[in-house]
Length: 69
Image 1: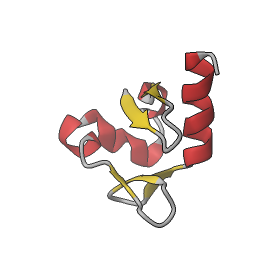
Image 2: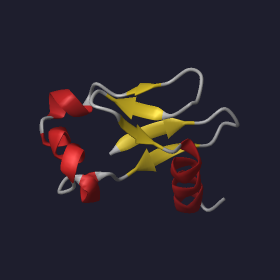
Image 3: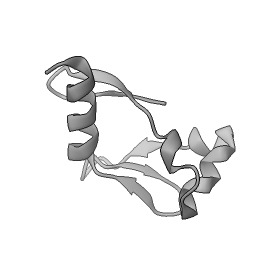
């Protein structure tokens, strides 16, 4: 789970466990690796070491759908 807060005040969690079996995402099995998450200040992209990047628009729509927006 990853908790996100967006500039417009929308906040909530996204489930990423379904990615754990795919290539580079297998690193996340180690919680310490998953906790190395950061946000690129220029692109607002959620990133991890090793080049993993999650599209903020996709994440926003996921959180919005879960919150009923």
